[in-house]
Amino acid sequence: MLDIFDILGPIMVGPSSSHTAGAVRIGNMARTLLGGDVRTAHILLHGSFAETGQGHGTDRALIAGLLGMKPDDLNIPHSFELAQEAGMTFDFGEVQLREAHPNTAVLDVADGQGHRLRMQASSTGGGRIRVDKLDDIEVGFTGAFNTLIVHSQDISGELAEVSRELSRGRVNIANMNLYRSRRGGDVLMVIETDQVVPPVVRELIEELPGVVRLTYYQKEAD
Amino acid sequence: MLDSMQEILEKIEKSGKPFWEVVLDTDIEERQVTREQSWAKMRTAWRAMLDAEATYRSDRRSVSGLVGGDGQKMRIYTVSGKALSGDFISEVISIALCTGESNACMRKIVAAPTAGACGVLPAVLIPLSRRDVPESELVQALYVSAGIGAVIGYKACIAGASGGCQAEIGTASAMAAGALTALRGGSPAQIGNAVAMALKNLLGLICDPVAGLVEVPCVKRNVIGAVNAVSCADMALAGIESRVPVDQVIDCMGDVGRRMPVEFRETALGGLAATPFGQEIKEQMQSRRN
Image (cartoon, rainbow over all chains, first blue to last red; front, side):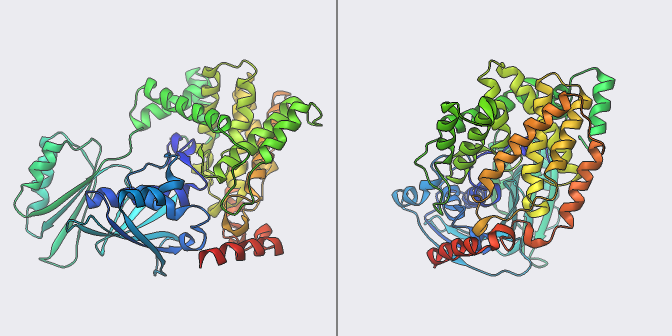
């Protein structure tokens, strides 16, 4: 649903809300979900991102996001140089995906300390984004809410435990989805919340038996 | 939720509040924010518009090299006093160009409703701010424009990929026409007429960006969006009415958009993008990619 600041906004570095602002947000999402500074990034562009991405600064915008910039950062055009200074290496390629949104990027990022994340995301218009895949599991969340991503083992009651901790912390769940690769395999919970999830609540969830890893994306402030 | 112009007009009638305040109330309710928070965010958008124009530089060029410097030419011509269109309109033209160019050159702008159409609203509002209209009234005008844009986004579309340029520049022009009419003391019905006329005048406009870039013809289309807004606001304020009711015009824009061939919806396969010049630029950009 559009609010009036989707109409008058975002305040952003041009030239295109989908090809530039959305691309910054995709990079930023990957950085957040990796949970640390990005050291290496392999990025594949699909569809219109591949066709007109260079002219729209999509490549620079994605790297800017990986560096932690927001869509209104005037340093976006200089992100390649800033990445070099920060010691990040990156490369771009093109890919043809089946049934993907025309503005899609696949990012394979690592922090140099053993953490790696593979994320497929699309820029769906007006600077809004959608994460389509995380480590090859199909998901679908937008970053329009505070988002908690819990990797856990596939054991019964896990979801109830997680939601109990959120409820105790007075965090209201807006949307919730559960994904798994197969029965008894790894489970991915994507929980979108109305309130910020405080660090203490995140720690309690992380300590629950069966929880393997937790990442958290806090939505952009006004 | 603002789902029709009729609904806004009814809310104005019922509450006795002005157009802008009905939109503000909706924002407070939908995003669960205070009046002050909403106002501060809108004022930030206004100041960002001012900033984009103030930090314009004529030596910047876009990625393709096709865009840059025209805003400055128009500024100089405006100051010369020779403009056929007079002081006010020539200033509108120069601000539309400066802001559109700034967007193409990766500077900071406010998408309104899209980045490609970012020059239309500032082009009509900034000249008024230079003619002693206080900031509070300009922020109110932005609420009016946002309410209009929200209705068009809900009933029709605001993306070139969905409905062509009429959905981007057309919507921006309708938003600007309504904002101007409100600023000059027009009635809610007159605001509706200004919106209807502005959108009708740009109905069917295709989205045909050369090499798929937000450069040609996008920057200069901001000018037609802005100038059209001024003329439609003046017509509405003069008491001229749109024969077709505003909500029907908006529905019609959405319908024309849906039936528009895909070549004319941002794919860069038709229109100016398909001219020999357009093809040449596309090839140049592709050779740089490889």
